[in-house]
Image (cartoon, rainbow, N blue to C red):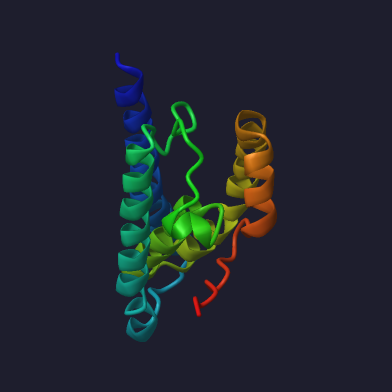
Length: 162
């Protein structure tokens, strides 16, 4: 099988686990412990978060495809991507997934799914720190300068051009 197809397939499996597994597991936990659905006012925050996350993912995936790669670390882009959302945070894909999965968790109204979404930040951080070591070894000083000027998680507000 072509490496690119395998990498995109792995990404699709991650999507299924996140966007299907997290809400289903959350709802099952909620039922098991007797939690009711979140109030409608809270659930209405979900669609804008989901939309923002999906837009971020599409933007990042397009940048990676242009750099001849995939979002899967098995077949990363051949070039260091620093444009678009990568100018604001080093991990816009993880941040976009967080927003989108949190949006889905809120839409289905599951407190446990919301908690799972936040707990998934722990292994995500570990994976990303490992990926950053790989980026540093692949791109050297260019990556070191980039990582010194762009935050890992919380996007910085872009400076206005005068």
